[in-house]
Length: 274
Figure 1 (cartoon, one colour):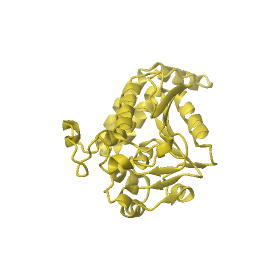
Figure 2 (cartoon, helix red, strand yellow; figure 1 turned 180 degrees about the vertical axis):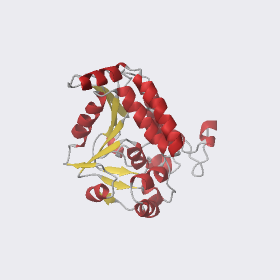
Figure 3 (cartoon, helix red, strand yellow; figure 1 turned 180 degrees about the horizontal axis):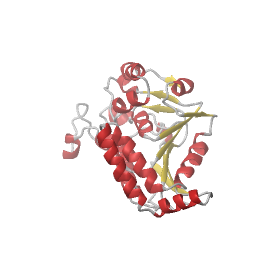
Figure 4 (cartoon, helix red, strand yellow; figure 1 turned 120 degrees about the vertical axis):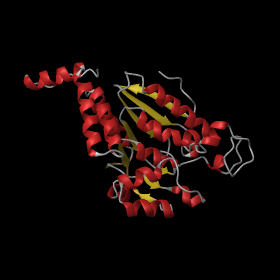
């Protein structure tokens, strides 16, 4: 069990690591310290074999309302480029969004399925993190917005990468240009939510899906996930080569042996994740 931080909670259940953003009084708004801790947590989880899938959710009335307004205003102790005179670390000078943007990368690079359980506001950076997940379960209270433009900011944290890949180009452009808030039914219609569930049910439904993945052949699942992401910037010839490598790697697992034997014996396989 990882050390629990006040601003997030982490627990493991049936092979599923559950990360809960825990700043409910601020609608789980992201600040520098929270994003640093979540990046480190995901780095750790990448190497922890007992965690085979991950659910990301938020405590209280929403998933994540975006960047913390106090920090974004430039009034916090942590500096922000262009909005405060506080000295910036070398790391932040090279990557102004710092760990907030790095968290989007780590949701992909944790190399395990990450499932978003959404409710209430999913806005700004929170929208980016939800879009970076493998699948999104949202309840009927979910509301999504690329909210940066509403504050005068250009979009960040990977929103412009994921939006046009998940929804229509015209919808992506509308969202980043206007910051319009989409209600749950419209989010579902536009493909931003994969499954729309009754109020309060996003976590249970996401957990059941994550448990299904955790019970599967984890090496094959993780490689499949890796190469789907790889395909977004690769040619067909490259993907055929990558897939051949993945097939060879997974063929050496105990689960591949079990899966083929179970198929021949006409029974359900018992995968172990290695």
